[in-house]
Each structure stands twice: as C-alpha cells, then as structure tokens.
Image (tube, rainbow, N blue to C red; front, side):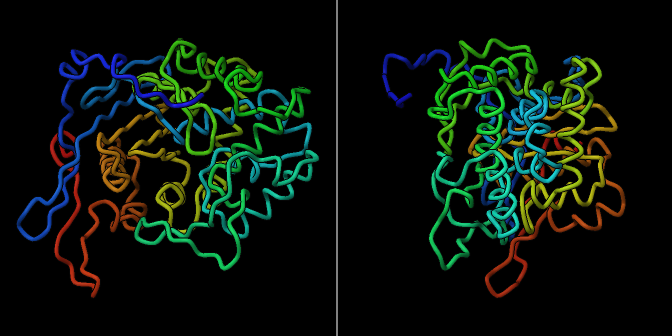
Amino acid sequence: MAYQNKQNDINFDEVINKPINPVLVEFVRGDLVESQHRGSVVVTDASGRIRFSVGDFQSSIFPRSAIKPLQALMLVETGAADTFGLDLSEIALACSSHSGSQKHVEILRKWLNKIGCDETDLTCGPSWPLENIENECIPKSDGLPSRLQDNCSGKHAALLTVAKHLNYPMYGYTRLDHPIQQNLLQLLEQMTDMDLMHAPKTIDGSGVPALAVSPEKFACAMARLVNPDMLTEKRKFAANRIVEAIIKHPFLFAGNKRFETRIIQACQGQVLLKAGSQGVYGAGFPKLGLGVALKIDDGSQKAAEIAMMQVLRIFDVLSERAKGMLLNILEPPIFTRSGEVVGVAKGVGPLTT
C-alpha cells in the first residue's frame, strides 16, 4: 500500500469549506501568547448520543495508536488470549504504546515464546527504548535498537497470537488483504457503526493499516468499550477484560512518567485513555459510560494532553487526590533551562467554561 500524492485527488472545495476549529490551548510566555492550538472534542454515550462537543467532530481523522484498545478486543474475543495463557499484563501490552523498558521487553519475549515466535517474526521495525522526560522521548540504551522495544510491539504480538490461534498464515499479517486485518476491519466497523472498507486508509508508523474514522464514531466506540452492555456476550467479556488490564497495569500500558500512566494511576478506575500520534486522544469514563475523541489540528501532543485535562475537569472525573497528583499537568508551567518559571500552557475558550 504505497503512498501516492495525486493532485487530482484533492477536492479544493472540501478543503476551503472545512470548518475551522476553535483554539483549545495556548502557550503563554511572559505576557505574550506564543502559540495557539486548534482542535475538536466530542463526548458520547454508548448509543452515540452526544454529551459534549467542540469543533468539527465529523470529518475523519486517523486515530493512530489511540485505537489500540479497540483493536485488542480481537485478542480476547477470539479466545486467543486464553488459548495461549495470556494474563492481564500481556493484554495491557497489546493495547499499549509502551516505552520499551526492560520490564516491557521481558514480558513481550515470554509472550512470543508462548506462541512459538520470537522477535524476528515482528514486522514493526527496531526502535530504541524511550524514557519520557518533560514529554520528550530520549533514547536510553547503550545497545542496539530492537523490535521488542518498539512501542507498537505489543499490538504486533497480539496480531501474531490471533493468527496462530485461527491458523492463519503469519506471513503478511500487516497487509490489509490478510485475513487477520480483514477480521480487525470488521470488528472496528461493528464498534464504530462505520463502513471502513471504503474509508480513507494508510499505513501507521509500525507498518499496520490505519483506518480513518470520524471523531464522533470513535468516541462512541470508546464508550462501548467502557460500557459494553449493548455488545454481544463475547465482546462484552473482552471489553471488560481490556479495561481491567489497562487500569491494573498502567505502567505496562505506557511507561514511566508517561501521561496515560499518570492519569490512569491517579484516577483509580475513573478514566481510561490512550494517545495517538499527531495530537489524538481516545478516552473512556467507565463509571459514566462515556467515550471521548480529541484531536489537535496541528498534531501537538503536549496541547492534546492539556486539552484532555480540561475534558477530565469538565466531566468531574478528577478527585481532589487526583487533582493534587496531576496539578503540574493541568496547567503546566513553562521553565527556562535553569528552572525559572516564565510562562504557562493552558486550556482556553470552550474548554474553560
């Protein structure tokens, strides 16, 4: 599936008439607004009823890695997880964009051994482990990059596990025409109520097909993940297990000092959320039965975090304890390299009402 840039494919009327999203986040240095970040947010229940919206929530986006918890449903629903004796730690890794720590790698290596595979069977490509400091990913390894350290290796291990369980060929498991990808497409269609076969498609950073969905439908799918009562019994069981795995293993789901890990730890079961590249977040509020889709137009991940914090505030899912633990990421100060505070990053406009 090679990328092609064809001028005739561009619908300029559609580009010109696309709604302009409101400014959701500002970075202020001194008395000057240094940058502004526009975006959209939509919150729905499992039936699709919109509970909150800001900006254009209908134009399709690539959820990227934010969709991984939905993709991981297949691992549990097919029986593959039980067949190979996977526990909640491995299921959390299937949903993750992990930091490639020694703990992540050890669990992944044992998982692959359970299904008769090894690192060479993964097609995600080698990566350095990541240590998240001030939201900058810095390589922290004296050795060589490996596929087990790649942040998408859990998803790839899950795909191989399901392929083994269903007796599908392992070769080409990332191709859209492979039966494992066709099964996954059908699952996502059912969760989003969208025709994804004819939706825009591309390839994500780890070589797996990426499907475009509307934020509204993505939010609804996340609501169904955390409130699965309307799903089939098999899928309901799978959804509950996915949510349990993520909430019980927030470190494996992301990593040390990572935004998702900190939020899930602080909120103690009130929030499940997953980042995707280019300023995307998908989230679910289990006790409220709601799903969230958030997209920052310019792809700023830091702005997406600040916007998501405002959504958590609006829906009152942050306890006083959680607010205390997360104070420095609700409105994070901007520092000089010597530690002087010179500004602040904050939610603005419709997210501050």
